[in-house]
Amino acid sequence: TSPGPGMQISISGQHFDVTPATDQHVTEKLKRLDRYIDDSASAHVVLHLEKTRCLAEGTITAKGIRLHSPAEAKDMYGAIDSMANRLERQILKHKNKISSHHRDEDALKIKEEI
Image 1 (cartoon, one colour):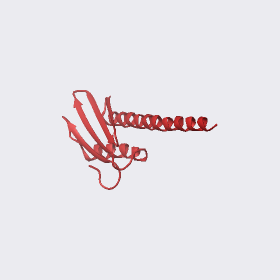
Image 2 (cartoon, one colour; image 1 turned 180 degrees about the vertical axis):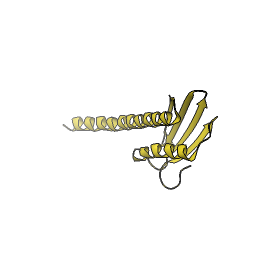
Image 3 (cartoon, one colour; image 1 turned 45 degrees about the vertical axis):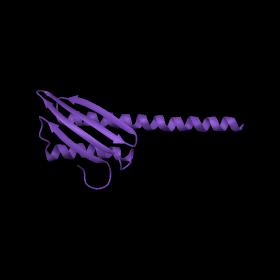
Image 4 (cartoon, one colour; image 1 turned 135 degrees about the horizontal axis):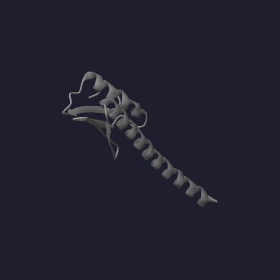
């Protein structure tokens, strides 16, 4: 779990020992997402190691939304990077959906006034 303000992050491993370096890498990647979501959000990351496959699964829970992203790569750091990038794209897509929805409402109000 991460100390201080910002998103709460929990990291666990299946058939994989989470080292301090891996923990720090996951935390740094997910801290980038703090600018898009509020402090009440939480993230849970599960790192899997299956023979030659490295998997990283991330779930972010924030005000009424739950975003999930699995990612696979040859090495664990690559899987973590891919998972964090996918989560960032999902957050931006969700934010864009919300803001464009409000923009349409404003456009309708302007048309009604004319």
